[in-house]
Amino acid sequence: MIKLIVTDVDGTLLDNNSNLPELNKKAILACLDEDIGVILATGKSIDSVFPIVKFLNLKLPQITMNGAVVVNKDLRIINSVKIKPDDYFNVIRSIKEKGYSPLAALEKGGIFYEKYHPDMKYIERIGEKLIKIDSIETAYFSKNSVDINVPIKEDNPLDFYLRKKFSNKLEIVRAGKYFFDILNLNATKGNALCSIAKILNIKRDEIAAFGDSYNDLSMFKEAGLKIAVKNSNSKVLEAANLITDENYKSGFGKAIYEHIL
Image 1 (cartoon, rainbow, N blue to C red):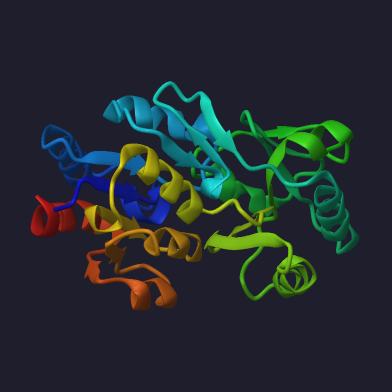
Image 2 (image 1 turned 90 degrees about the horizontal axis):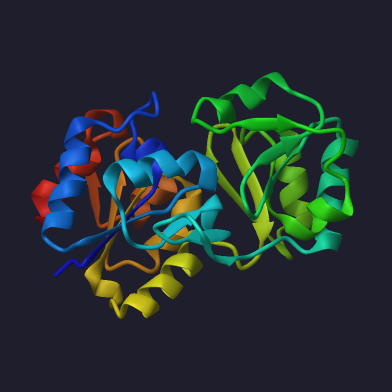
């Protein structure tokens, strides 16, 4: 019996315009009525996920910043996994040296950049507010950042370069076409879900996880039922037990009613 639903947000729960389909909303509310817990596991920041948590009146801890920050129902930080200062400076400088503009996300919220790049519009489109600042290469940012992002596609040479240089000591995940994130090696959706499940005393086979991107694979490992939307990348589709309709066709809601409720 499923006692906990954990779902990715953009590309899974929300449609392509970052709106919550009516069927998906009804499905979540129906789960809550049946005492099935609901957790959002997203790459979004605390600030941009707040409207969804409030709208759905979710009570359990929520997973933000790809697992780097877990917040309670009031969006107060329960746990965070920061990037180590030395790693932070190395990554930021490596990105700049290649001619790109990185973004840094702080533990308490806020995504900052020095020089705007047109592809940052893809991050803004999912509801993130980007803040221009003179320098993110400071001691304060190095001690309080949980995520470094650069909006590049998978075939961009910088993707390969950063993975080759840092994948042995940092978590590098892709959550979408222009969503490339670098985090502490322990900052994953899966690790965050595992810690919450232990607190709630919920077993793996009582968890259903929904996702679409590479950053959801760690979460799938901690769930008994793994459900992918049809628009997922190939690795997520291969890892799933069930494949539901696309995110823009309310695949999440359809799967809830067909397989869980």
